[in-house]
Image 1 (cartoon, rainbow, N blue to C red):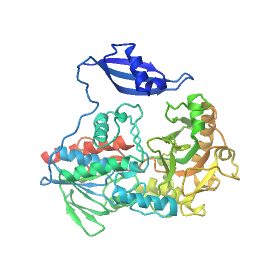
Image 2: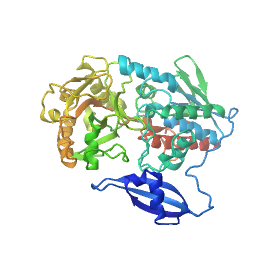
Image 3: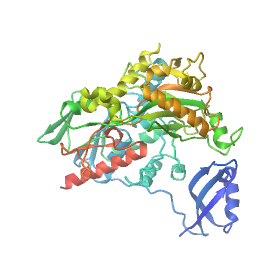
Image 4: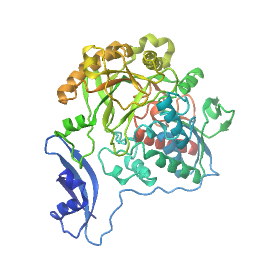
Length: 515
């Protein structure tokens, strides 16, 4: 068994193998073999440290790998299980079904990850929104082209270690098993997602792209089949519904078929972007960030009039992306490449929304929160002159209610236009952000600056709809064989939690079939 060593080292020692070996040799025999198993940065003081957990092995002792390969067998002749959506919930559900001896058949409304890239380029450069292929829809789901952050607190929903190990199995760096806040990067995720898809196909699963589900057949309160826009009909033993938080047509389909769904609280706000060098100087207490430190991140929260206002999906060295899924709406999100080496740092800044806030939409029943969300996306669109040009305002101008006569350079490729963001947000959200930004400026000296810009709107923090399911069986209470899954059903909040929920639903399907 290895000896476990906890070390506090300098950033240079942590990220320079020769220096780290010398530091470890001060504690144990220089002939020992070591493996770093945990790494986190402590930047609370000017003297920045890196906390390491290291497994040290005696000479000749076998070094234990950080991950184990998951083995699969052919399921081409096994019972079919339908999966709606090829995001992390759908892909990991498919892999787990194969482990369990069942045949997954994925129906993805969008394109494969490589073809999808062209539609995203058209969205960025030509403002063309393809409603089935964009940042939210297509192979890999929203996470593939919007960052790949893998940090989660959902450690009771499944095995985080297994999810991360599968990512490594299909091409991710082992660093994601070590770092306290693991991240893959939008530039690397497509190849990993492609490898997962090829494995699903190799072992007998199927993936159908450009296959939007238009109907879910139910008879005698049991799921029977899915119907596709292209005319296809596919029967299966069960349906794992993992369509993501932006599949509004699926929510409307379920509602029209009188399959129970519920309005759900979510959050709404803006994207804020600072120069990355400024965030580095604030967080690392320096003029120039050390080459041995990653671009700095932050996490902020403030209570304003009883509401939570918080940063969300912070992207160091990142880019603000246009994430509309339909024409006539503006939606922003953020992502970072693996090196996080862009000159800007962006984050969502959002305010919590409660059921009473969308009370005027009660006539829409369980779609009330969705309609509220949609209203503000469309309002943002209506105020600018370009199809995907986003409304924007300098940070201090926003707080002071002042029009920004000029705007700084930003990472948002379709471009921004100076608009009073008060026009794009509900009054209570505008007020909440104003008060929170002043408080954030006191928590992070230098954050409150007109060198920062707010870009609207950040509205897809989570699904505005929950699809209920039984706590034990994970099936919809009205439809046997229907398994609401992942972020779109209201049971996840990111790549890893969605992946774990996909695995859970796969196990639920197996248990149902075993009777």
